[in-house]
Length: 154
Image (cartoon, rainbow, N blue to C red):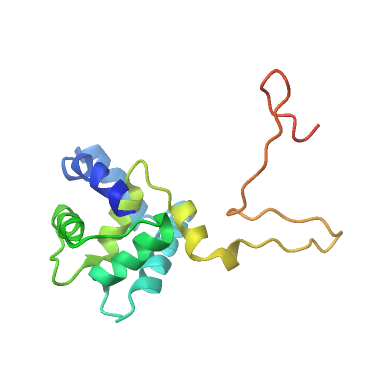
């Protein structure tokens, strides 16, 4: 998340008022998409906020980075991220700052959520038969025909 975040922060910092309205709708709106987005980011934040102070400190954000991308976080990256998100490095990344991060283009809340909570993405047999019901975190396998089109359901 952090390496992607560094590339994406500049446009977020200089957003237009229409972009701010969009972010406001995501963070404060009552629509189901906004609620789902907020709930998932809050769950991720809470999962890694080991000291329960409301912020992801260097070690906590490092755990999130490692879990979602396999990359380690160094202190210089951490300080740059904190400053770009207007968070003090001695406190860490707030929930609101993590929401801004996941609202940026190029980040995938769903992908990260599935890596962090794989148990929430498992399939269960349907009541009517033994087929699997696809969950949002499962990857769909596509079969391509010789013409390059998806023939998975044929």
